[in-house]
Image: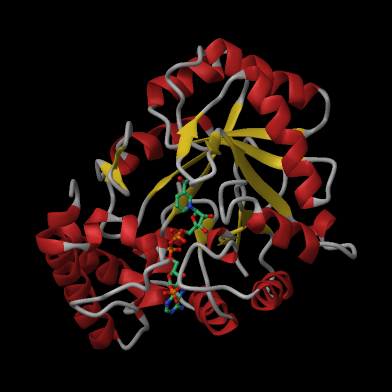
Length: 326
Ligand SMILES: NC(=O)c1ccc[n+]([C@@H]2O[C@H](COP(=O)([O-])OP(=O)(O)OC[C@H]3O[C@@H](n4cnc5c(N)ncnc54)[C@H](OP(=O)(O)O)[C@@H]3O)[C@@H](O)[C@H]2O)c1
């Protein structure tokens, strides 16, 4: 494993982390025993970073991760969880970052994760109905109580990051970032308030924060999991991503095909190219990739064994240029 170090965080962080969303059962399917195997194998392979959230699988991902990390593993890893997305009985989510809600959410996450501290506690999405001072104050409060070690912001504008930083140190940022979504303006139809490459990465470098790119494989499109007319099972969360439908999908798919042709030419698997394109960027800390099988996880870790050359990186840049702002 290759490890990264940022100014704001003491520990070395594995360049590849595990995104735990698909352990919750919102994707095609997931068996807890399979998720448990993936978590244990990840630690054995040197991965020390797990990203999770209460909303993933409606609490289930946190429960699975907490259970798997029992027996001495918890102390060896960095857990990044989140708060700020609540849901109703129909699983319709809403953003809420009030003090009261955060104080309740943190205790629930600690219970499900079976731990008494969370290493990085991230605000999942902005809540523009709650003053930043109130939210930042609540984060300060739970940090002072030892319940969290670092604050992270996920999907926030850089102006908001600065406003939070004035009250509580923001040590980590998380944003949508992969070869075809570099400064994209939406995620699952939700407008994004940041440009990842042009804005977020600039702040991260300047402030010495950790940066966690999410959806590094564009939910599987970039690993060759999809076909041109990919259909998801009715329960798959990817049905809610408008980028996977119609003309937009055809454009992204054409981008994937050009990258796949490049991968074939250099005789490297696409999943490893996704990992290395991110890993070789000095602003990127832990790539939080999802893996639905042990085989996928192991395949992604194999990217640590080689680097893209300068020439290959330049070739990729040329292929993905049309996607700079898509
Ligand atoms: N902060 C946020 O708002 C936010 C939003 C989204 C995600 N996230 C975080 O980011 C993590 C990862 O993002 P993501 O799950 O959206 O997308 P992703 O990591 O881009 O894609 C994961 C999917 O890619 C496929 N895959 C992975 N490795 C593969 C391999 N070696 N070969 C073939 N296919 C492979 C699998 O698809 P199949 O399941 O079809 O096999 C897997 O489920 C999440 O778990 C979560 O922790 C955060």
